[in-house]
Image (cartoon, rainbow, N blue to C red):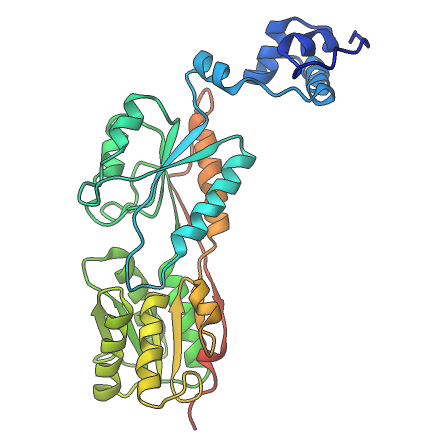
Length: 349
């Protein structure tokens, strides 16, 4: 039976205080914190009540020494690319930090030599500074996933293993093709028949996946795509140049772009020609960046469910880090949505 005596108010509550309040041994309190599955339900409830009443906070540093865990998740971040409107990673990192915190983890951000995709990983792995990693660079040929897999380091990738769609490691991704198809169908439903595509170069599997959504939507309506596509670098300048060429040679009435960065370039090209986005030529981007939300006249854009991506990633990591590990589905593919604004207004005439 729990003892009702009050503890002295000097200093924070200790494990011994919790044990006395709950009427159990110190080892039982330790098990309640570190291995709750070992306790009977009524005993666990009694200890948890004592912890709550006393406001006890386990010594995380000491706990890490005993369990060889840090409760840290490593995430390598890259410098922002100049000349772009892409802030997708900022939103994702914020969501990941918030979701990890709710699960009892913190995110450790680290950098590395941009020319070496593995820089930073080895030091953290050797020092056991983190329990697991989240990998976001999943471009074709990136060695991170294979390197971590060989060393049996727990990780989840934000992005599909493009070299092997049914890869062995866990991943969470957003269906870019479905998102672009949604954007294209939105324009087609408004009466546009000459919808141009501006995307990334062919060596980008993410860009090609998004492009496939445009192709599919156009072909399902029996509309041609020949001469209506351009592949460029992901910069505002490149988007503007591509739009200028397409406007001269293909005369599209609408554009779908692989990113908001490229879409902003299209808006610049239209403005320079005295054309109004939404009224004269429609434009839809991808990522629903802050720029899309504030640029005039308001850029319609495909929005990735990054909050849900973070939830799925953390849930998968919890399974991988449990004892014993809980088998996880290799891949989770989430559906994006379309945020409609004035840039995809009524069709001309």
